Image (cartoon, rainbow over all chains, first blue to last red; front, side):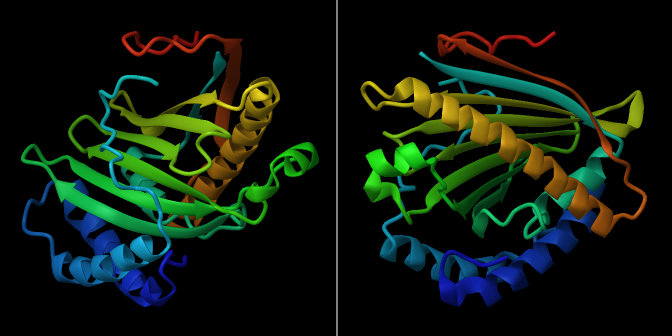
Length: 72
Length: 199
């Protein structure tokens, strides 16, 4: 799958691979040892946030919607 | 006045397998309308829940009559934010999704809960709700009607896409069983109430 930032797709795929492995092998099994994907995520984010600003995607101000969110 | 949609279904698949597939469902043959996918935020809370935010770009295909009325919407994609909480103790994944552009034309808010049931560990329940509104004076009803139809069609694609991802990851997954849709042309539930129950 491609990233919204054309130059970020490789960074995204690298991060996704790391996350999917950690999620299935550690997180779901209750292993609370650290997240090995942090550095990869930072690089990916640096790229994707730049793309979001350049494309003027209006995500600022959208508060995180948790499970107890009131309905619209 | 808006439209409310609720659908409950079950997948013959354990919850944790569905979770892994959830993050890997794109691309799939049923998701050609999904153009990009990005993770913007991830955090594990002190009580070991996983919070995530994803951003999607999707195509915005409109019916002919809408293309004539809203020419500026042609060739413009829809940006969609999905926030999710995975609670591995409670075996729930709750997602909230909404579009962050084209909001005056139509807003679609979706809440989806994937719930693993302890007594039936090889099944996962899925409850999907949507609230569809339009702020366009004089056209909100046909826009909402179109929005509801598109949502239902995308919901079917979404489930097929998830099943496709599951079968790629785990060869022993089974087809889903849909209990049925309920949609209403009724005033939206007020913010303080729980959504209408489906029975």
